[in-house]
Length: 333
Image (tube, rainbow, N blue to C red; front, side, top):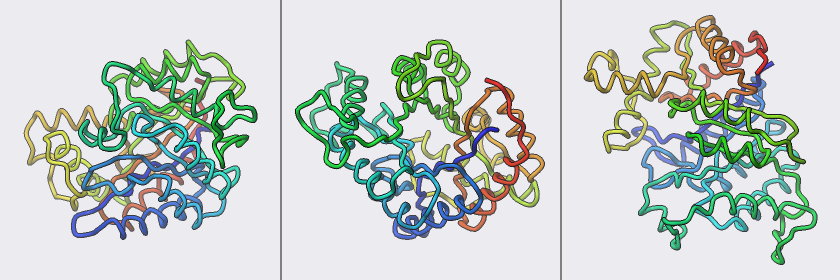
């Protein structure tokens, strides 16, 4: 059966602040745990007025302290922003606090503009791709007998699952070559999803971390008791996408009646493409759309995203997604 998990950006809504976002993130993680979701991931972004999860490991510690069983992790840490040793220490600390519950997803994009990326790491070299070497260095810090003279404390000897995240073919190739699980950001960049899945599965090399390919796909869910309500709550994410792509990033706006009819044809086409990996509707409609997506992709796991303005409406949407997930049929990859 396909697993369902939660992807959270800890959104800052219009009229609110980061402090409230952190309360909402903990509430969502606790709700996801009660609903039976497998894991809860936070994504690292910087300099974004509508996203509060910049200090990802710190916020994961807050979430881990308020939950009991659900796996917690990063989806992901943008490794070019950081020293691999620092990330090994941070996630070694998390694993020591919450043993057997921590995941570490690694992304190659900076998760911000280049000016912010330089402020984060300062010595970035545009002519050299250090990501594969950084991944291997980070994994080595978690081994029992690291090859490096420097030790990650805590971190050494801890069995923390490492994932490769991507929105292009690059991540698929790297995850396959290293024998690591692969998560594709199809919830906002679906264009190369099917090609990336095929490349990953075809080229996968078994490793001591993973013996067979494992694919997680981002998938948006906007669910409510009625179809009209579901389409209404989805307009917050639609507005946010248009604002971001238009160079106007901001806080997550409230729903807007008839939003799709108020934007131009170009914006409508962009949203259809960006949100093609989504389910909008009632319980039965969401179940049917999720089932069709799983049948098309053979996903082992769906990482459910839901940028919804009203917190209770967001919790309700995840409740419906969880209920829909319990009746999904498994599909061979």
